[in-house]
Structure formats: structure tokens, C-alpha cells
Length: 400
Ligand SMILES: Cc1ncc(COP(=O)(O)O)c(C=O)c1O
Image (cartoon, rainbow, N blue to C red; front, side):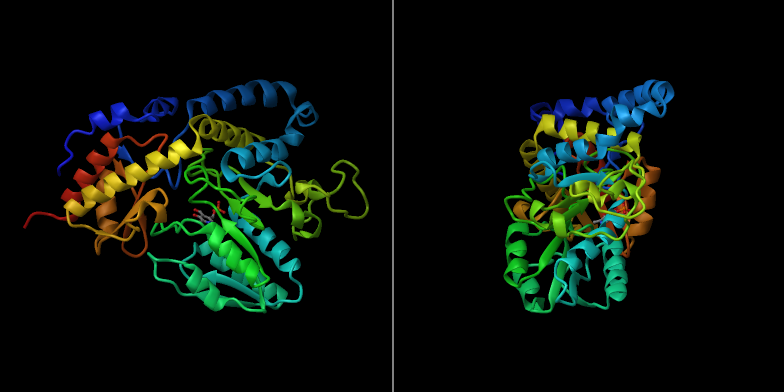
């Protein structure tokens, strides 16, 4: 490998100091799975400890009226502003990504009642595909599958060929969970609108690491998780975005008391909240939302543009090292076309991943033959990448 000393790169990295803001297990040689579960911010450790002791322990039920009840919306607004390019009142923290996709598919189909097709790509994440099938079945709709190449993924050409006057909803992921391909949100959203349909963007692998401008791009609906690049912890709640222009007509199916116009009225009949609260369902996880808030604040402090710049450099650096070793890469080589993970294809991917973990290098295995290297700019150092790729190359290409 030509790069044997990553120290100057780490020393010159403007985001380098952020690494110390996280709990770093120095026993690990490299953690390249921040795109599945981000590291724990020290501020979150302190915040949650204080919350458990003082707020839960000290305030008990009074905590709801004192501040907790507003958290889904206030932290939603914070996340929307810092990560999504969303003006206030359109983003709320709630449930899991899967549950929110279910809600949004129904809401989106409901704003195009005269149409009966949902479009999704066969490369999309399983939860997205399964839910599209379930919602289509429940509403008597048809699923139209896109079959794109994994690396090129959903281009405007591929999408446009499938759109028509029956298309109600299109569900796409901004960054493909396997190849890392970054889709063109403005162009694809425009194509969906030109066909008279609405789009739902799944931002799980992009929010916090790719600049996103939902309002400016006139996106209709979006959803994403917070435990990857937002570093909010395992099972932390997700977020939902509904463009203000759709809010009044967006009817979601899990109409719990938290989505009602008056939470504490205990009314006989259901009336949806006129605000983004209508996307809530039941009692939210306060601890989870506080962890989201800390993660969002760290990203806001670093700046998404600076994070993106390092992400492009880290992924390019990783690709160079893998290329030198002759490994097959299934991630776009143009930095503008990829998110923040780099994926290697190898017939022994599963066994190699197990050997890497045994050597304290943590990547991610994805069926059937992919090793994902997640590069999380606030925490991943160039030293980690060099150490990890050196061990990966040893394990992937045994001598003899
Ligand atoms: C692109 C994408 N969509 C949806 C999900 C599902 O999220 P959850 O399990 O939090 O519902 C994931 C999880 O990793 C994902 O990567």
C-alpha cells in the first residue's frame, strides 16, 4: 500500500477533534460500522445519565407537562433544520423507520386516490419492499418494480420508464444500503412530479452525512433512522417529514391518541391533529429523543458540508487502498454518486467478515457476498481505514 502513514492526514483533518467527543473503545483496531450503529457521543452518555436520575427519577409524571410532551416536535424541528433542509412544523420524531414507512405509504397513497400503482426498486432495503407489498395489498394497489443495476441504481431514465398515469407513489432510498450509490433527489423527485405522483424518500443511509434539501427539492414525504450517522443509539426513534402542503390531507393509519388534535381531551371521536403531530401514534421514547437531540447537535456543530467533504475524501482514500489490493468494489467511483460507505464484493465475504471481527476490525456483512465499510466522518480516522484495509487485504487474499 502506498499510504503507510495516515498520521499527517488525521493531523490535518478539521473534523479530527470530533472523534474525542465520542466514547472510543481503544481495544478495537477499526470500527467501520457507523453506518449501521454509530458510536456513542460522550454528551449523550451525560445527558441520558442526568435524564434518568433527575428527570425520570425526580420529576416522574410531571416531566410530561414540563417538557417531554413537546420533544417529538421540537427535536423534529431541530433535526429538520440541521439535517434535512426542512422548515419547522414538517418533521417529527416517532417510532421506527419501518412503522413510519407504513404510515407514509398510506398517507401518500391517500393524496393520490385516483391512482393505483406504487413504484419501488428491487434493490431497496427489505423493510421498504415488504411494506410496499403489504400496503399495496391492503389498498388494492399494484406494485411496479424497478430492476436497476446495483451500482448505477435508480437513474432518471430507469424511473421515468416505469412512471405513468396510474403511478400514485414512488418509494426510493437516497443511498443504497448495499452499493452506497447516492441517488439524484431533485431530478428523481421532479420526474415523479411530472408524472403526477408523489415521492417518499428513505434517508436512513444519507441523513447526517449527505447535504439534504427537502424543502428546496419539493420532496413530498421522507423518513429515516437516527442510529446510524446520527449516533442516537440502538433502536433510537426515527423521524418523519411531511411537506407542509400535504399536511392537511396526510392520513396515516395508526391513529393513536398522540396523533389526535387534543392529546389529553380523551375525546369519544378521533380528530387528527392539524400539525405534524398527526404522524405520531403512541407515547414516544423520551430517552431516545434526547439521544437524537445530542446526535443532531453534534452534526450541526460540525456542519453537514464539512462532514460531506471528509466523507468524500475518506471514501476515495478507501477505494484507492482497495484498488491497489485488486479487490472488487461495488460502489460508484465518482464521489458525487456515492454516500459514505464503500462495499467490496468477495465470494468468501461472510467468512472474511468473521475473521475481521476476530481481529477487532468491525465492518458489516450483507448477503450474499458483500462487505460494507462504513465511514462515519465524525468518528472514523484515516488510521482506522489504513489498519482495517491492511487486515482486510490479508484476509481476502491469503498467500498461496
Ligand atoms: C434503508 C433502510 N430503510 C429502513 C430500515 C429499517 O429501519 P428500522 O429497522 O429502524 O425500522 C433500514 C435499517 O437499517 C435501512 O437501512
